[in-house]
Image (tube, rainbow, N blue to C red; front, top):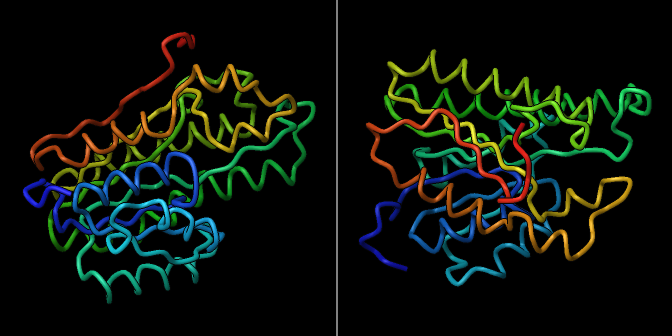
Length: 247
């Protein structure tokens, strides 16, 4: 860890830190000196993230359900007591389901996708904004998906709709809060080799997984966003595998 790094002593709250892009990002940020609180629904997964870190004292974990507002209130209050000030929020929590087409998607799965992916994003960002406004600065990174820019069959109807909604949420907040010094970056990864791929009816092969984005690729982009000066705002950023279409 380089103590001269621009992230040294920054306080970061990261949702979805137990696997995939969230885990890789937490490890990278901690390596660069940030204090990182990771959250998620499974404490064993969060502890696994900490065990992989070369600086485990820089990562703290707490269980949370982004659809449960009482749970989130407890998380943010705990963050306030432990760290004091929130510099950066990274929202990586999200799900998809196996039966994705309009014909297959059940009302129950539709509700879950909207509740976790979209309403969960609202729940988390609302509490972060309450803390950032008084300081007149802050960075929020919403890890969305190319499905939030292109409604393609691969993502599925419910997932696409939830991610398009997330795009509108992020862009709207960025416009409303710019005079408060709060920046919102909407990150749109293409296919990434994470556990969410297992939720497809036909999960991809290991060869396919090796040739798409890896979690550390996305983490490197997030690290760059976090290290930018407060005067710089990147509203939207797409990152995708070289061989994946973007049409």
